[in-house]
Each structure stands twice: as structure tokens, then as C-alpha cells.
Length: 369
Ligand code: NAD
Image (cartoon, rainbow, N blue to C red; front, side, top):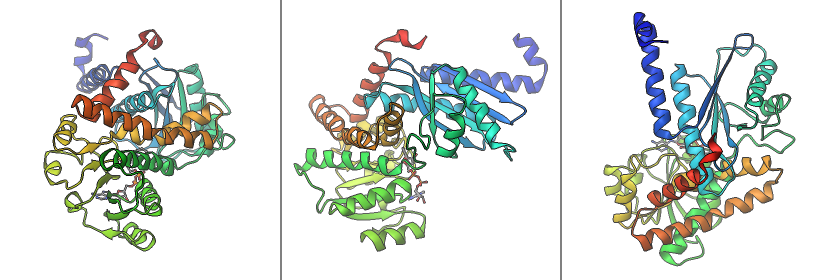
């Protein structure tokens, strides 16, 4: 369609601009391909973003969420698929990153038909993308999808679980243990003080695990119920959400929101380690360098919060929970090697980790065709 034709209608012009900026975004992220399916009969509007196939088929969750606009959904799927590629590459998985976003209709009249149609869509891609559980979907939906495609994991038969949070928390705990060993030469968490921001699915699971290993906890959350539970069960000390950055502790563990490490909070941090589950903790890459210059060891989020992704990849490969746990425990060595390299090269951990992942994603460019 020519630009002149597009410009004739104001609405079309808006669409042109949106597509154009999405395409620019896709180029910046180094895509990959994107696929859209609209099915009037079932109400399915599905977007699948495949970021990279260099290391193997793209893998990543299928979210079912309401979105204001299709372009927001597309942007979300691209951003998340990109992140999956980096998580997979740094953790040595033989997969690229992918993500499916289903724009949730007001009512799904026939859920069976809806998810079967999505399964057909996944199957049409011939294995470029393997789908899994994410926000809004569960092993039950994966079972329906599996009637139409084999490129699916987390089904009940495969032992799928709706909540990957304990596995994510395990990866975070292992990264904390590696950091304590590296910084303090200690092979135990006994007496180690951890300040946790956010006691949701991951934060609460982490709090339990750390408490069992003898760590002291200071916790912040905007939910009083979560705080009370944590105090009662794990003997934690409460701190207000605004003051958690100032707590004098060994570790600050962001498990709530992104962009919490920024120019203002770095000045306030009173810890020597930052390791948590939240995605995109650094408001900008340069804050990794600022942490490094302040002598604060940062465990890159995309490396240490990949427990759920690792499990999904393992069960797709017909592995079991035992194998997943072994592989997630391996985060300890990956992140320890990174801490050592950061110290010897005098460079921030996040920059080195991203560099390693990027190299692995471009090693054999023929795979992306
Ligand atoms: P969640 O929604 O269950 O928990 C978030 C918690 O943070 C909630 O208890 C909420 O009340 C609290 N919170 C919100 N704003 C806060 C604030 N200003 N200060 C303190 N607490 C605040 O989410 P989750 O599944 O536990 O995930 C936590 C983070 O980890 C998210 O960034 C998520 O993207 C990331 N992550 C999660 C997983 C997983 O397996 N769940 C995997 C990878 C990454």
C-alpha cells in the first residue's frame, strides 16, 4: 500500500505510524519473526513473536491478558521474546526466545475451540515456536492446545505446573549463595541479612528458603497480608516500601518491580550484593556500571530468574523435575564465573552477561532463516 493511499484516511495514517514504530522496535531488538492469527469464529487474536532461532526452536509462555490495543500486545510479545532469548542463551539452553500473546476477549464463548485454534496456529509454524504456561494460562489450557500441536509443554501429562515461582526463587537463592561465597568467603547463609522488596509469588518463596537456611530477613511490601504472613512464618522484620533501599544488610533482593535500581536508589543502597527476581531491575544498563564502581555485586536478573524457563525447556525435552532442579542449581556456577570475570576485567556483570548472551545468539546466523 502506498504512503499516499495510507495518508488519505486519518485512521489509516495512525496505523501506518504504529506499524512503522513497531518495525523499528523489532529491528532494534534484532527480530526474528512475528505471526498474527485472527479467528472470527472463536474470537482468537493471537500474536507469536519469535526472536531468535540460532540455538534452537524458540520457547516461551503464552499469556492470555486483556490489552487496550493490538500494538501494545505486539510490543509486549516482542519485548518478552527478546528477554527469553537472553535468558536461554546465558543459561546454555538450546532454545531461542519466543512469546505468544492472546488478547483476551470479554468472553471466551468456547474455550475448547479457542485454545484448539491457537494450537493449530502454533502447529502452522512447524516448530519454530514451542508454547508454555504464562500469565492467564495453566496446564489445563496446554492440554487443549496439545490436541492440535506437539509444540507445547507444561501439559498435565508432562507434569506442568501453573506456578514456576518456587523454581525462580531457587535460582535467585543460588545466585545469593554464590555472591556470599564470592564476597565474604562463606559457604552458608547462616546469619546473612537479606532485604527483600516484594513478597509475592517469588519473594515469599525466597523468604521461606532463606529463613530455612538461617538468613535474617527485612521485608517490604504494599500488601499487609503478605507482610503479616512473612513476619509470622519467617520471623522477618518489616520495613516501609520507601525505606527498603536504605536498610543496612548484606543483600538487597528486588522481587517486585522493574527499574528499581536507578541513580537515586544506588546512592541509598547499604548492601554489597543486589540479587532478586524482578525483570529489568536496572533502569538503564549504565546503572550496572555505577553499582560496580560502588563495589556492589549485581547478579543480572535475566540470568538468575530463569528457573521457570529452564524447567519448561527440560520438560519439553522429556526431562523431569530432578533434572530441572539440577540445571537450576547450575545458576550458582554460571553466576560465580561471571562475578570472577567482572572482578578480573573491571567491568559490570550485566554488561559481560549481555555480551556473552549476544555472542551466543549470533554465533551461527544461518539458523535464523
Ligand atoms: P507477584 O505479583 O506475585 O508479586 C509482586 C509483589 O510485589 C506483590 O506482593 C506486591 O504487593 C509487591 N509490590 C508491589 N509494589 C511494591 C512496592 N512498591 N514495594 C514493595 N512491594 C511491592 O509477582 P512475582 O511472580 O512474585 O514476580 C516478582 C517479580 O519477578 C516480577 O518482576 C516478575 O516479572 C519477576 N519474575 C517472576 C517470575 C516467576 O516465576 N513468578 C519469573 C521471572 C521473573
